[in-house]
Image (cartoon, rainbow, N blue to C red; front, side):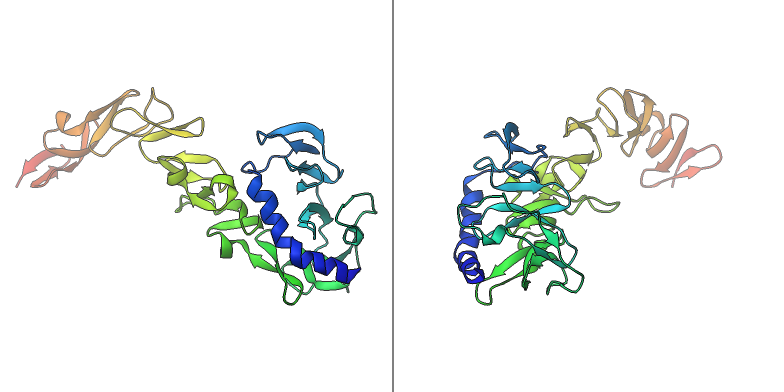
Length: 299
């Protein structure tokens, strides 16, 4: 039976993954459908998935699971079909799924995590096949299992090795999560069909920070966030929350009221920057501030 399984895995594993997901355009990210199948529009439908452990199943087949309920995760079987396998934490999993023919059913017993002595070969593997510790089914979230037909094993490969800036993936061409924004970095968003990651500004014009999936969280200076898009502030406004009000003006301007940024040099001749209409902070070239009166002196 093991030879039968390895034969199918060798010849069908990669082929079926490519066949299923090159024909089917998946939403980005895959939604939680509470045990239902995706519709042809990529939203949750009404047809129940075949496996009760499956949270969302494919548009093309109720047997092919895309997202599993905890503590199960999707593993790709010899048929190329997504199955819900228990995450065992670097321990072998006992399952009868692999003893089935290519017609494939889910009527067997639940998976059982074996004892702590039955560990997987790959340190980044969370569940491996019983009696085959080198055949990983589920990896840590930043890795995916890549099958090697030559030695009939599957090892955990970093998602970022195949998709730059991807931090979590299902396989080498489907990313779940990209590097998110930080205090000094704008971050990345999922590309079309989750086939990789792209910069925030490329995905959303004028976006200054994003969450690593498909949402802009902050806009560049001079813009505010409205319905996941960056919209321009009032003229000469640097920071605003909506089109009607400004909180900070651009350099060389001060906030005259909530709706207007006035030019500093119109109030203080030769003033480069000011706090308001009562105080200049910096002069233009060839001028300096005279304190405490804050007069502009030419030199």
